[in-house]
Image 1 (cartoon, helix red, strand yellow):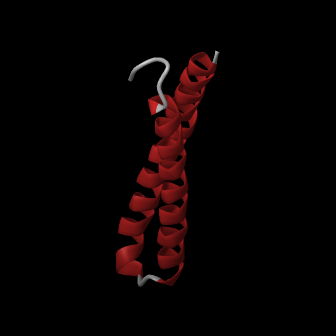
Image 2 (image 1 turned 90 degrees about the vertical axis):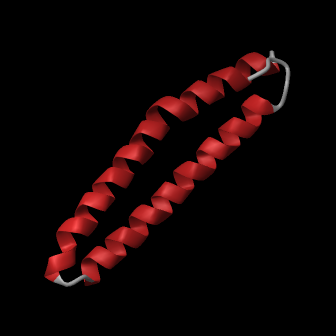
Length: 75
């Protein structure tokens, strides 16, 4: 990533886009979980948990780091 370029901003946008995509995927999995036969529920529940972990990790680590870089680039 080069300083003084727009790469940091694009990466922040992409990270936020991925965060929204993960939220959408979680909602879809939860919707399927509510309607799934008992045999499929465990598998869907595990998938929801994995997506939530990815979303939380991205929200806690990646987005703030990119926001900090964007602020430094803007100065």
